[in-house]
Amino acid sequence: MKQYFQMIKAPRFRLVHDEHRPLSDGPAPRRIRLNREGFSIVPGIRKKTLVCPGMLLAEYPTLDKGDLHAPIYGTITEINARSIFVDAADPAAAEPGAFPEPPAPADLLQEGTEGEALVQAVKRLGVNTRSLGRRIRTLIVNALNPEPGVCWAEPMLSEHADVIQAGLQLLRRFGRAEELLLAVPRGAKVSFPGVTTVEVEPMYPNSVNELLIREVTGEEAPPDVAAVGLHNVWSLGRVGTTGLPLMETVITIGTAASWANTIVKNGSLVGELLEFANVSLKSGDTLLRGGPLRGESLDRLDRSITKGSYGFFVVNAGEVPPIEGDSPCINCGACIQACPTRIDPRMLSRHAEFGKYDTPRRENFRLCVDCGLCGYVCIARRPVLQYIRLAIKKLEAEERLARLTPIEPAGKA
Ligand code: SF4
Ligand code: SF4
Figure (tube, rainbow, N blue to C red):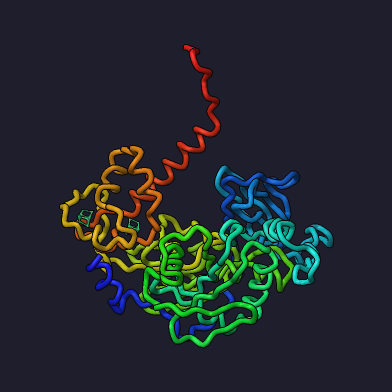
């Protein structure tokens, strides 16, 4: 742990809060790609359907994800197992009445619908409600930027204070937590009515929810405390203040030359965002959806910004040594010392690499908080975090399958 505590004091792990970079609107998309995995397409939605902003396209069967809505006027050009593509269109250039009318705003901020019914209402408007809290004593709103390089938390709290206020109001009316805390960077002057502000050191990985809870309460994984990200509260507030389905997300677009906080339409293509940011790619550059430490690399310019995305970064060729999938572990132990949850990323990644998921390892995989520090410090450039993520996905798939497979009655051959 000594290395971990030394490392997180390094300036590169500081979470930006005092450099104000305003939130501005992103480009009007020419094409949209929405992720529909696990969603059921609603009747009447098919290829060539004309859509309008806010139109319901697909529903998610559980509260884990909000339903899916079109963020623009356009025509559906393709629906496949993973995505819905919409090409933008101008309704003024079409026959009158060709496009459906956008939905009327819902008045969620008006008291009336409360508790679980309110949770269901915001889910239908597209907000992911799983992380908005189960029934607990304390819910902590995590107002730190999620990773170094991402910098929208400060303008969200100041410029969009009304949106955050609306999000907090809805969160309280869900009735799931007895107490609401707002965790802000030490020294930040932020307060909202009815919410207790607590200060934490703005150093990564304190922004990872599990570690933030430890910072705030002094306890590891207390059973009656949960955390929710400010990004999610913004989404909730956006739906509350507009009354419309969630059609946008806030991302930091980061390149070697600049960072900007941008409100983009869900499903915006990364290629169009690069054009908007005036960035031309060079051979060997890497695109990251998410942040520099935990983001996933993208292989094509028609990949898109999904609802929960909080960043989009270009890492220039040569800035970081490439990760080698088959490079062997040299047992240096750096990842073990860097891991804030004191599990053994070295052995876990090796087990994942060779498909060994025995029972004790299962529990350890679950303790990973996905901070990415193990991969960051690995001098052998092993994709440690990616191996662990793969293992977790496989274990989840196995568990899903086990739930679906009927157990043979005893004695049956
Ligand atoms: S990603 Fe997981 S295994 Fe790696 S350092 Fe973070 S908590 Fe530990
Ligand atoms: S940091 Fe990399 S090389 Fe060192 S023990 Fe961990 S996985 Fe192996």
